[in-house]
Image (cartoon, rainbow, N blue to C red; front, top):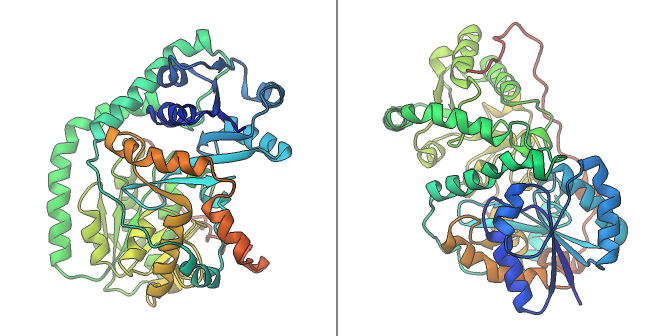
Length: 436
């Protein structure tokens, strides 16, 4: 009999509904709550509360796993300190860990892997493996679309974190995993909100106008300041270092007729002053007329007309690959493998970008969907309903789809070598980053 332990999930009822599906199949479900937000989305289902600090979790969790004969752990995000402790104990005990994450492909997919995601994914880095195994990955239908609802997602997030006011009493040892607490981000969203409507309109018009001019350009998509892909899975300290590295290289090695478009993440709360930083740095480098910054605008349009994309490990990279655009990844996302992303240094990429192999991309995408992606979403009811049946089926498999393929075709050890290290930002008198 499988005994499932649910830890922290997303700020939505997704994990609670998933647990209901498991119970309907006669499985035993257990839950540990770590904060008031966890309680809010799990109630009225039974659970225990851990009220200590994260460094006290190991002994508590070790006893709990043994007392309840846990066979499987379900969690969202493998970099939270709570989950790192759980994963380490699970590995010692031979417990299967099912990790959910936002989709490697967006917007109609979520990720589910065993053991870890992103840099800790089991996905091979050998392009030949994907070419060999693609025939054994069923060609399923393209993901069904469903209406997104940003307002609902935001409301769910606020509901989850509103419970933080009870944490000093009910969960005194709890500390949020993000470097910036969501309540602080809410303040910046509220502060930025009155300007968003006007900025959306002006940036959309500006991007259309820029594309119509037909100038050759590369796209530099920024990622969220608190994204674990930056804080845990890259050599960059933050977006400022990434911007400095790329603009410095572009100024020194990009042709004089080339332009660079810096596109902010659409969900950025505005805590960081990227726009003035980019403008000041570009002026110091003598490339102010060739560097363009947009908070909003049509991302797909910018991708379609670009010469290529430079990113750390953003999922924008998969959008670009799907369009056949050259991509240089300065970290090690799951799509970073020879034949897809460029292997040349950043300084050379500007003038000789190499496009992805379309056959390899087709094979990689097909295998990626079959092994790690689930059509659906975490936040709106339509997306959750779409994802839940597939998710519960995968939870019950003896081997995950990826493990099954890995058993059929061996992976050369060389395919597990680390990615090319990202260039470090040079010491310089460039403007010092500062909050708005």
